[in-house]
Length: 61
Image 1 (tube, rainbow, N blue to C red):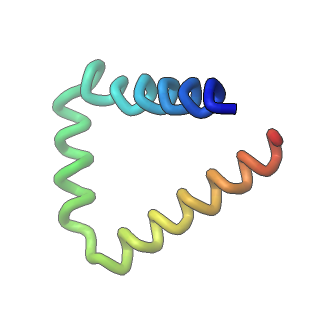
Image 2: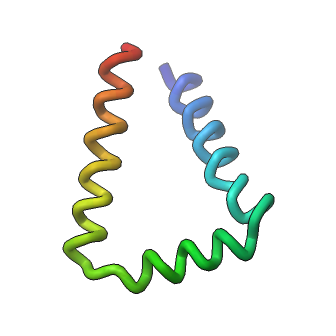
């Protein structure tokens, strides 16, 4: 079980690192756009990401 968690964390870090590695200017622009969003919008986006992740985990377990 712990190996699976470490594998998932490693894959997550690889995917998160691809943005700044391959397109640093586009990544910076995206972050500036996110910063300018109102808090309610960010919470809604975060909630959608959590629900999507839970559905994916449920489907593959």
